[in-house]
Image (cartoon, rainbow, N blue to C red; front, side):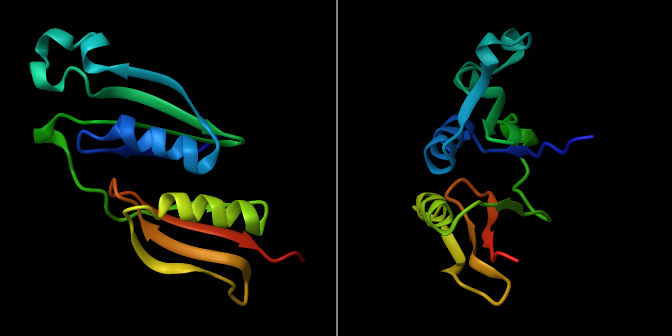
Length: 136
């Protein structure tokens, strides 16, 4: 069994995934717009360029996302995406990139359990915890 978070965006899925490519060093491995999908004819013209489904990978991390139709979009709540990074430098780079335009709830810092730990909600509305644990 594997867990793949599925993120919803309010028309900004492609921009968010492009940001995640840069921030996390990953890649969008699949992206289909509404205009390319089987529901293209039932989709309002202004939404056909929005993301029907996309998949992102970075190392062992995979998540997917989409732009639900405006009447179906719900603001993310009740979850946080947590990334365990391999080193302090990589953690700082990823956190800094995700923090652009974000609401930083806890700046990246050393804690009693982690070399680096920080929390933010990115400019696309996705909540993140990013950490690098201390060696045991």
